[in-house]
Length: 242
Image 1 (cartoon, rainbow, N blue to C red):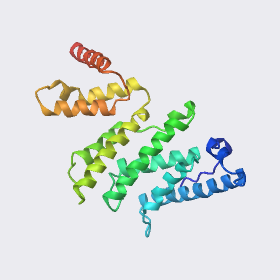
Image 2: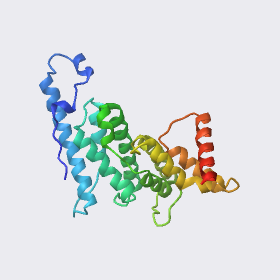
Image 3: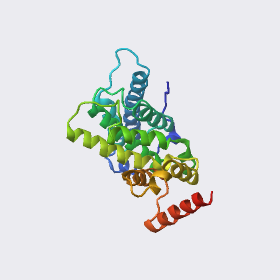
């Protein structure tokens, strides 16, 4: 079980706090941050216990809300805690297919929280730390399949509005996860092409459009339409020359 302490190098005080009244001292700010970090750690522990099927453990809205509030108050998370939260949410949403959540609303909160944590990692962590979080595009694709294309065996009752919100949030979350699909961009592009090439070339079938959609959703290469045409053309020629 991961326990993360707030090391000084993990966090820089946001300039916002320099604008507050003088009676709000750095010590008070640090005390507040430590309190919220403790609550976020409790959220992580609950997620871990839920995955381990510990009796009597229940996930509540506050477990996600405290993570959002911590960032709204301009506090950062310790790197170890931040990475552990990402890993745990990925395990629940992508590894366990969301089955540990009691309802769709709780799963939706988890997806939005994961998206936020991925964004914060990209924007707040040092360049040399970026590669410390690595995600599997295959798990991300399986999550989209389950949520957006009703993979058999994963049906749960919910309103159409909630299901649409979950589908939309899942797509946005996977978009945020793209930069974490490494080891290298070229490796991921090759893997994706191997996965989807046959369907993409069958232009008369509806699978062609679905596979093209997956390729553009999952590929970490953010090129223009013209650059994509060059890539697809080169892959097509490579295939013909094999």
